[in-house]
Length: 260
Image (cartoon, rainbow, N blue to C red; front, top):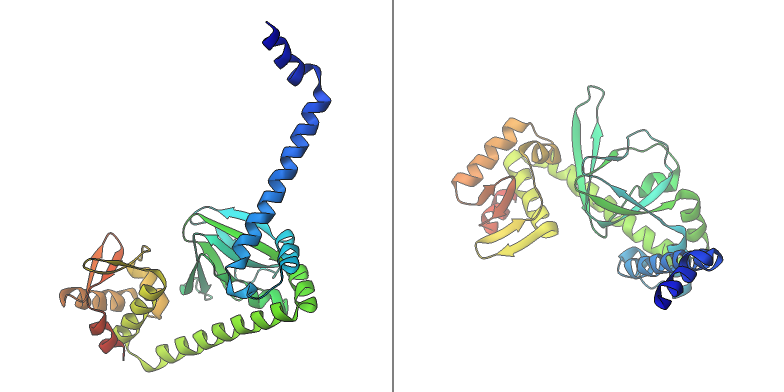
């Protein structure tokens, strides 16, 4: 009986205490979210060598969003409002021509950033972004990104390095599309995907992401038919194995020879 009275007093008779405890819980949860975000940022090249106070300030300015598989994050032509960092999941970046034909540019995964160019120059988005899996991203507004870059030389330097990597990758991709035929481009793309998403198994390296023929064709700038033909040849020669849209590379040296 006494125990019942004690419980009743704590949760019903004293609502002010209940509200205080609730607010305290929310505050602790917010602090924990910021602490978790600091830990996440510490492991990204973009924030290398940043002192703890700067990391804490950045972590407070980010917000977190969740996207379901297939949900659009932003469209090509949208106003540029933010930089995105992926905590979990995958994001497909693609462009669309006037006829509505889509061409995939790249897939990004955990630890990658995207949307950085438009966040800097303020021009409309040059491509669309869609969640390829259930995805969690951290979002920093263009205004707050600019403010942090202006006061942090280290962050600005890291950002320039990240942009240099993107420019080099784009140059390499243009060269591949211009100088190589479809089998060669496909071989190079499979090796690239294996390097980024590969999981070593007993019989090869499994690209740990589902890839349809249309996905691959879009990524290498080829028709679905020509990509399918090249995939079929790779499969028949024992270079790769395909199971339920997952590709395992069995003979990477053969792919390197084809892609050279």
